[in-house]
Length: 296
Image (cartoon, rainbow, N blue to C red; front, side):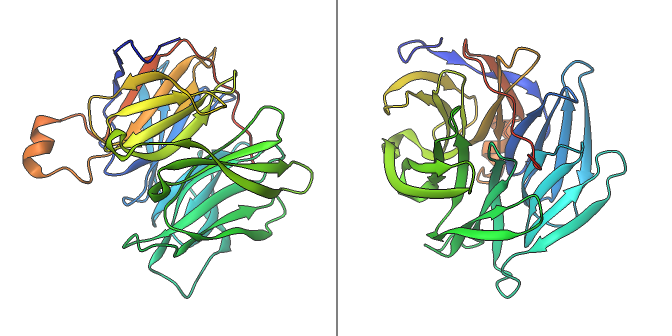
């Protein structure tokens, strides 16, 4: 395991040129990684064995994607939820969210252990408490789970399904909820990690098989691992200031993949960081868990 005193840096895996990369997820059945370019409205599929990628144009902003039991993808799009057939590229709407608030968009999302898809919204101008966190059930029903969210971001669940982790980025915290797998309800919100602003802003997160919480730090150029009690015990440096999220993949789930963005870099900064917006990779010594799939 990488420890906090050790400086290890993630290396370039593939240059996807993501303006605002987000939401990496490993599809073990297909042996590939999916991620999104939010503002460009694209889903990227990367096969590390073939070193090949494919791009799907969703036709609207897309905040997150997750594999499903039937082999396609469920998406959190600008104004709701949709499905993407990776064979044909056809996108089908499931449900609309906040149709009277076009200045909101979906951001990060992930599936819970029972196969429900969670994703949250944020205002395009990032104004405080304009967004919410939603839960899409396999039957298509949508439930509002949290209000007054500013930038809904990282999500994941503990192995026993009893704890849900969640990031609302401007709070500078990783919060936890008691989670009921049977009902999909959340309760008892509390802060488990408080991140100093000089370290960056918490963005996406992923749990490893030991319960460690890996947090991408926007503006901090790093991914930090925290124990379940909130202690920082591992650091991966990323050679661009804006890592957005991370996930574990590969045959042994030991590859940590990190998405990044170039959106806040000036032209001269982009010239000096040609791989901003790329997909990065490191062997961290930790192992991930298979992604939960939509539908159960």
